Image (tube, rainbow, N blue to C red; front, top):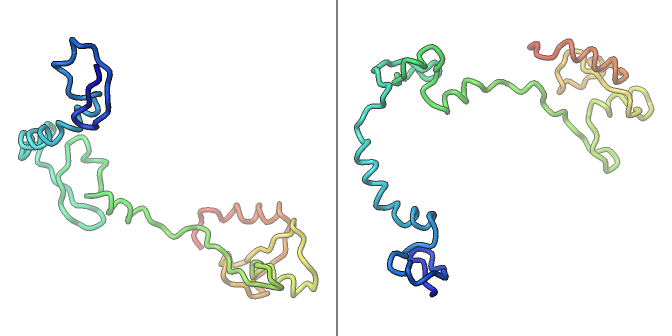
Amino acid sequence: MLLCCTFCGRSVNLRPSRKKRFKFCSRQCLEKATRSVREPARLAVIKGKKPYNWSGMQKACQMCGKLFYISPSRQHTKKYCSQICYGIAQRVEPPYRPCKKITVNGRRVPKHRHVMEQALGRKLLPSEHVHHKNRNTHDNRRVNLELLDIHEHGRISSKHRGVPR
């Protein structure tokens, strides 16, 4: 015997004995169809209730200074009132800013490599790296640039990793 689900309309083949109780083809359809009845009732029951770990403790947000309620177990760890304040507090200047690129003969090349090629009068090898002495990747003056091999450049750069300029 074929019957249709009252929610999604899908046809389901059933035994005649299940015909009287059939309304939904699956638990998902049952849940979706009855949510509008269940959800307001659930919200009405919990509205205005305090959580089980309510202590009335308040703490000031380290970012915006707003007071917010906190559970006793989180009093030493929670510092921010919201995810937004936490995100703002975690933002730092990225350690690497992409270098400026210029177009030379239809090809995009990093400006510091082009400056070094002009100073040397030849093309740089792929194994040659251009190091910024003052660690400012946007300062492409010739006096600030130094030609190093890949291993030497890695050794020098790793010393300064995590150290502010």
